[in-house]
Amino acid sequence: MRESGAREMAPYLAQPPAMPVGTPGKTGYLRLGFERDASGRSILREWERRAPLIVQQALYFDEEMPDMPCVYILSSGGPNVDGDRYEQHITLRRGACAHISTGAATKLAEMRYNHAALTQRFELDEEAYMEYLPEPTIPCRHTRFRADTTLRVAPSATLFYAEIYMSGRKHFGAGERFAYDILSVCTHAERPDGTPLFREKFVVRPEAHRPETLGTMNGYDVFANVVVLTPPEHADRLYDRTEAFIDRDAGLAAGISRLPNDCGLLYKALGRETGPVKRLVRAFCSDVRLETQGRPLPPEFPWR
Image (cartoon, rainbow, N blue to C red; front, side, top):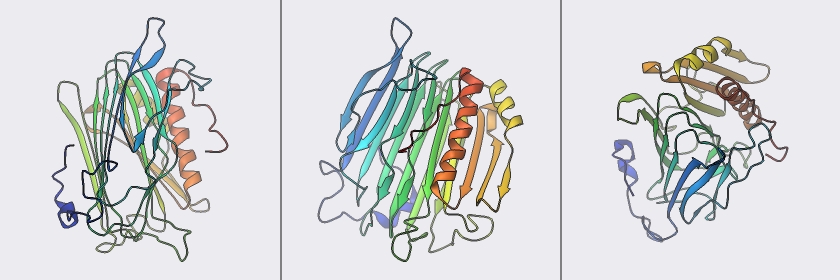
């Protein structure tokens, strides 16, 4: 498994004495490949997994896009712990579509020696469409977490990629708001020929710089980061009708900006609680789907 050269993780490389890095059960791997069959329906053609990452089967419950497979990524190992290394590689062939989420929030347990890492790669061929809407990530006290994501997307494809991070277990005991050690998140995008599009990285060290200050989280506890890679004509219309706002009574704020190289949009949302932020992200995803596919996102299941 490829390791990142992130310098900020250098203090967190000691081997956990109980189960070192690379131990079976600590190196999850998932490879999913989607393509269209002879009838035009998108199917999960390639499927490789290594515990604790699990995908059971593709479901077709989306009433607006009944030919789109919906896949939930599960973990049999509970929370991510010290020294875990997970890798996900998801490919969509020409004209295929897919909706991918997680079965529950990703919990990051307390870590004392090393760190947990997630390496992701998404590849979309021409005219492919994908929604990646995982449940939030919750860092506990003394969590060290690194996420490294590569988006390799053809010019005519559309990728809706979302991630939501909480400040911690806000309602656990006296609260664990920004009690983790470090959160390092990097996303970079390119065309299939390797042409770079953009790179975004944020490193949060609450002990060194408190995120609650003005100009960062400023009293909010939930942060959503959404990347939309789509052709310029779709991006222009979405940008024009998506308003930035601050609603102090509801405890919500959101904004939108253009990505470099005319490759798409960057949407960010803040909130005090998870539910309202998730609804904002889904509403924006519905706008993206309506613009690019002509059909909205159906209502979320009540138990989600």
